[in-house]
Image (cartoon, rainbow, N blue to C red; front, side, top):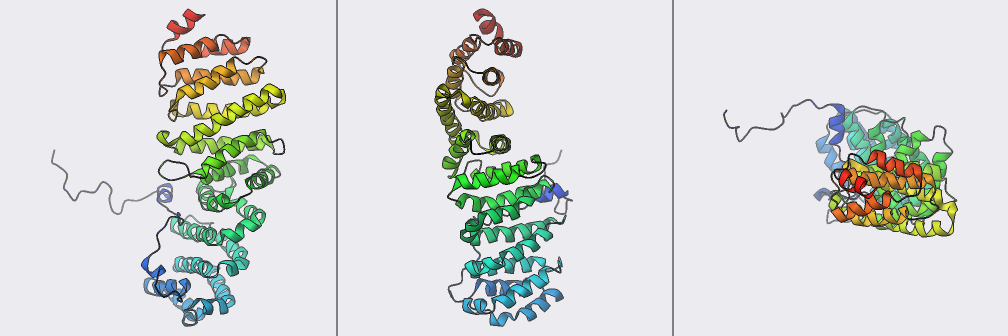
Length: 421
């Protein structure tokens, strides 16, 4: 067989890409994007809008865009004071041409809209709802390029206007919520969550924001269709880059887990939202960078155990947190479990608690079985022996039977289970 030519390409240049494949190549992360040279001119008096005009009159030679340039009178929009003076005309003209939805020059129009927001900032915010409504309409497309242009524009809105958006977070969130609905395609959910996460991180009153999110969703008909998108949103808030979590996760994860004990929140909705948040998190995170996640959930588990000892009404809170813990432990046969010892210690403590409700004890036993059977979780003989011994010592008959019935596939079942029993 001949060796491949040095010029051989793994993929054909003109290979057909399915819609889903094209979607996967879209990048709307404008928050870490480095400005181009034309965006960082030394002359601070030149507006970003005018710089963008200069770029696009070279790149887009369509009749429609030329008509727009003539109508906008770009020669009167060179400096920021000029843009501010003529802002009403600029806004009206942009909206007029955006409503035409002409794909031949839609990209430069959206780019110029983002540049206008960058120039005007606070003075642009009054026009934000009008532009948002148009962007919302433009998302009704299967054109992946158009989707990228629209969401990039929206992301720039969030980047430049976040200080004003968080002051009106209820209205902003309610306008975004339809994009998080399960009725929308998954890629719309994903792009909306990714772009809005930047704003959500900036909200200082996290409790009020979470309350807004949950109560808004709870009051909707067919709640489940909104839960999935909101779970994705909370994940995007804590998501970092390269398989690690964002620095804000050190505060937000403990807050979310603690919220499972907040009686003022709709707990059923919160738990369902967090199930999706955790599912995305454990699927994304690099096991070597999962320390923040494990520290957060285990520390809250410790606190909740102590709280339960004084208040048996906390059983449901404990049950929900343990379900999330089990979800993370079980993911891909224990893929992200780096230090099983810390988890086993908590499980053994729970197994030895008196009066633990059967529903809770069954979940503890289930986690015990998952730890023993997960091929990616490396246990020492001592750790496995302790876990088996304490699991077999539980007084709850149903929990004990569950453990014996489901641990037969454990590689050392005969050596540990049958010998100890």
